[in-house]
Image (cartoon, rainbow, N blue to C red; front, side, top):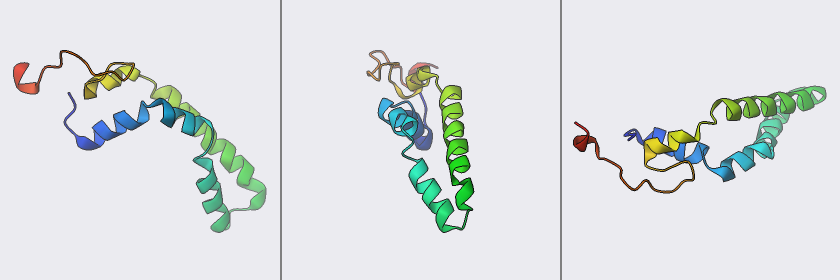
Length: 92
């Protein structure tokens, strides 16, 4: 079982199907492209920036696609609670 609260939050968030749909739909690109526009990024290159960031998101989703990491926070691959989860002092 994972003890670090940030890692637990990351695993819970990243291996959530809603998060995956959010990233695959490209919604996070909106604030990134808007911020680049405000900061003076050339308008001609905004499309390339958006495609590059989207490709990076897809690559990260492929690399970090091991849903068995949910077991580290007491859930199975279908986000159901594990029945027999040993506490850390029981495993010693």
